[in-house]
Image 1 (cartoon, rainbow, N blue to C red):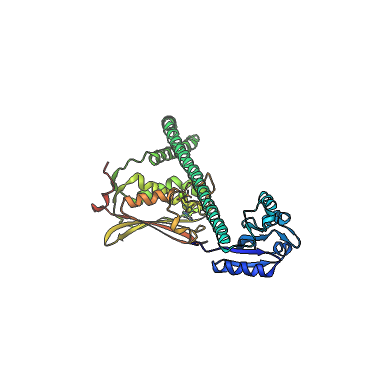
Image 2: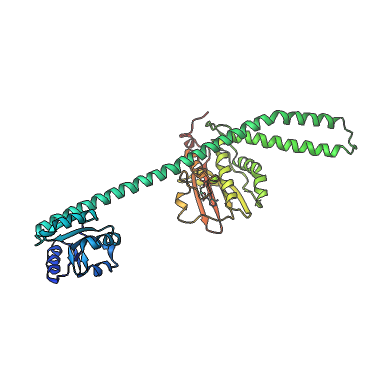
Length: 390
Ligand SMILES: Nc1ncnc2c1ncn2[C@@H]1O[C@H](COP(=O)(O)OP(=O)(O)O)[C@@H](O)[C@H]1O
Ligand SMILES: [Mg+2]
């Protein structure tokens, strides 16, 4: 027999028969236990071990037909082989209706017993294979369901982005009109007129709306790769401008640390903005009760000795558990509730940073905070291979 044999329970009131069967079966590698009565057998608590039960048709406390139903209920995984005399064949056939798997005639021939148990072993293998296949199918279905859900969510999010862009676009004209009109009225209002101050407030707020709309349009512009020289400090500052309200509403203090003299890099501006925006929103999400966001920009190096610009986004948030750390940049890995996270943010960041031949690293301490570090090579010719100048 190929497979590791299973355990067999021999239920027979005759100790000699039990011993004989045990000898035969143990030679074949089966583990064997015995029971002298139906009650003994039913009282066992180690049923999961048994692959087969050899059940004498006539026991002191009942026939096989009497106890089969209870036996099958106690050990649904074990096949029951009835051991019977030739006079009882009709009754034995009746036992099949109650769930017996097979029968052997007394006196038991070792070869026949071997053949019966071999068949049972085959069935068990088939059943196990079927179960494994069905579990694999369930898993695949579940994965498919989850992926479909995530794709749908991503698509919906992309749709929201487009909607936001088109609304931003629509807002441009009325904003320009308000701005012009206010300017016109202001021009006609003498400096000491008490109505001047409220008008100036309106003008200031309209300008703010205009900046927001312009930023939104910039961010949502479809990502055609467009390589140019980029001032990283400038881009990080713009991202902070755009998220300023969002962060303040959440009680997050922002303290940028931009080193002086950071060189411009050769990169795709839109894509870098996307990276910074993702890092800032992740940091904000990690600080539901407020905290401190520290964006840093400084000069650094990439191995072996390439000049680079380092951008760090540090938060004082919940942190990332060590076992999640290797997975956070996987597409669709998210710990956020449905509708809030797509699990695409860091995956996109990683792809963009890779395309720029840079590096993305994450340091995190659970309960203390997280630093995501993006290192991008300065313009040197080597960093544009994967990017097509637009
Ligand atoms: N700054 C951070 N602090 C704590 N956890 C983070 C941070 N950034 C990312 N994560 C973890 O990584 C996961 C994946 O992030 P991301 O790819 O942006 O997808 P999403 O934000 O949609 O969940 C998040 O769900 C979160 O568990
Ligand atoms: Mg995110």
